[in-house]
Image (cartoon, rainbow, N blue to C red; front, top):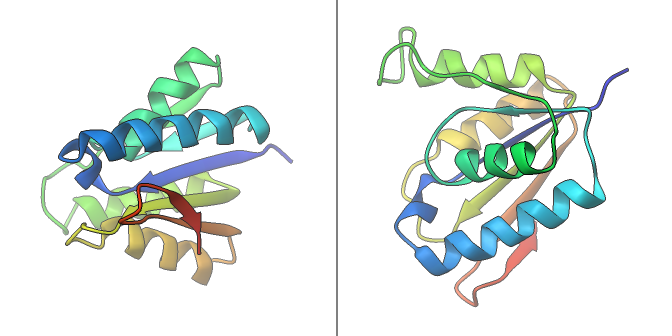
Length: 132
């Protein structure tokens, strides 16, 4: 079975430039240590774009699922998030302690309900990414 990794997370990293660099380093190291056969992304700013950046640099094939509409539903972020989960065999979420939305959290919760292995990480106020 192919190892298809979804990386989802906060768009807030685009506001916090230091956090963006910390997350970039984390994703690069994670992908090097856990080299998947393919990466799945939601095409959003922040964590999603960093995952695609690293997949491209490491020559990991990837798929991006983009919402048809910029709303939750119909045919928006919820449908895109379901596509991400249906395409992956495991998922990691990297959230930001200042994020006020829960899109990647919903995706992670949905993955768990589908019995997809999940790892949760948090960028904390101490400028570190910790496993939850």
